[in-house]
Length: 113
Image (tube, rainbow, N blue to C red; front, side):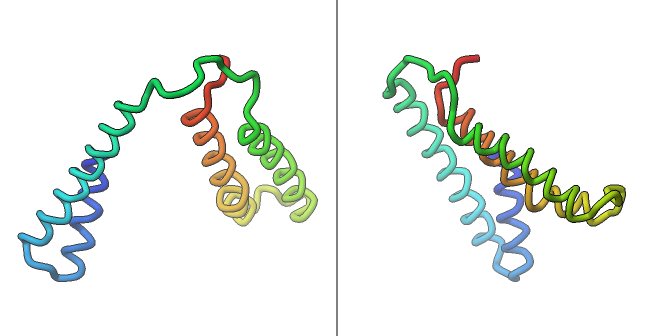
């Protein structure tokens, strides 16, 4: 995650026409910042109640949004679900937000598996 992010920062700096030393500075700052956040996460990893949860509200909301959104999309587009618009709308409005909620639920909650 650090290297692709640093690569994106370096490309943005190149597009802006910044000198090479500033490109290295900003890419290095990205990596150092990410390392600092990883260190903080490692230090605070055991500061929570160890009892796992039976369910997660964000995961339940994401699952409901996927089901309701797919049904709404099917009713809105009718029988023409092979249309390219259906895939784009589903990805942007239903799939990406629900995946973000699922990721948050499983990364930040203590769920029973």
